[in-house]
Image (tube, rainbow, N blue to C red; front, side, top):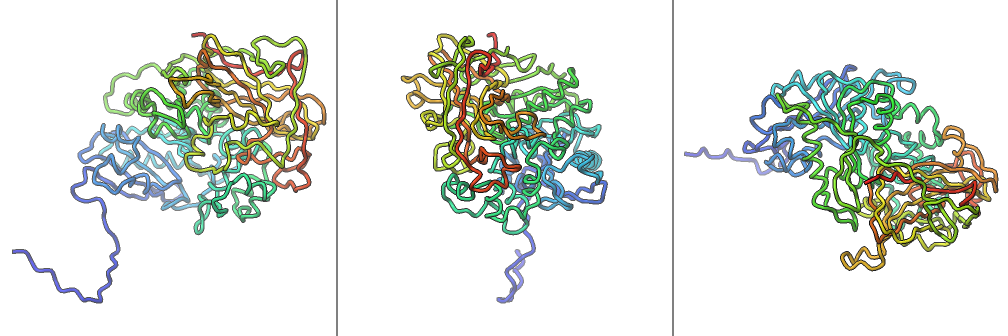
Length: 611
């Protein structure tokens, strides 16, 4: 006979201290622990495994984005439901999944420093993400009886950065690493700057990450961000308008607009190149990564140049930022052959890890240099070297043409760049969030191609495919009437005007690669200087790495302009020591002149593959 419940005072408090949402019938074990670091700081760590797991490898991610959230996607009693989608193949195959809040974030102790520098000139504490990863791995292999003592690290974006940092001085139990879309150099080409041009979307990130109370997006309302940034005049003015200059991370960026030691000492590709890479590494990214397009190829290149036999390979898929961890059948208007993200997870990431961290695994397959998805042809390709194409110049030519041969006669085209009406980086209204932000790199570029401040050059209709595999390189001979200038080059795949098989793509102008260069750094990223009005300079930079096929019937287009606003702050086009401090009167129109043919030929050097 059931025992009667005791009487309860009607005025008893209805609040309880806690509720364990992992019920006895759950098919998994979920533990929360505080892992001690060598300096006594304890880091909040969540350990998840299927019930009955034993002799299991550990898959670790170190995050600023809430280990609790990563392990409670749904408050379910099924392990596949509580973890991110990408984790299912691993926990269903006996892996122990571990997420940890990095120091100073969420439930972990200690101080948070954005992209905490490695021990050295910028960090005298003796503590960095490398030591924290080492200490965490050491604790895990000693305290998880279900483990086989082998660990892999994985993660994307900031988690890609912490994955790379674990390789600096790796723990002996660390057997493999998969850094995805990692931040490697925040000035050259990842989150904060690109070739010296400041990326304003970082303001929202800073406010959401660095503030204990009241953080989140900048409280500017829901209007067009194009207008909101114009009203603030400069990116520094915007920071002051919203009180963001009170954030140390914002002040650090504003104090270091050039590529000085502050940025150089943080560059993870440089750090790894100084060491012998011993941990097999699959470094990867999305071809249209809107946030960290630079880091993965930069790490691959730096390590391979320093250590040709290094155990490292590069993966590139047809994805946005961190897209490998989500559904990958499409991106914006583009459709692919199946779920490309799932294909890569199952066919490359998991086998790469299995053979290195499982107990008594099958032998590892030889590591190629690169596994990439050929967009335009919709197929995966494996290459023994990367880049896998031969640099071939495609020259700017008279009357808006592109030519595979250099024009004999020199010429020039000009446009007026007006800071009062900068070229938007996407069709307005601009909102740097949601799907619009995730897919802007594959958006139709016809919104910009007919502007008078955008030069457009196009090939004839292709009669055979042009396949590029690598990073297109820009060699632009140009002059300005001002004393500073930005130049933007877009490499575009122009679809046929009539396309009955894909009517929605008829005439589509697909950005294959888009990148900016701030002119004041033409003599060196660490040595900004004013430009001499009217003088022709050779501006050189690279577009992101791609594997893309321009198909017969398509055309190749190159656009040249001087702004991508408001993603990148405006260049005043007069000389000011720091653009963060530019005043309204500093912003002046300038005539930009792009030269072609003869001694001052401009070209986009394409890494053309011989299929």
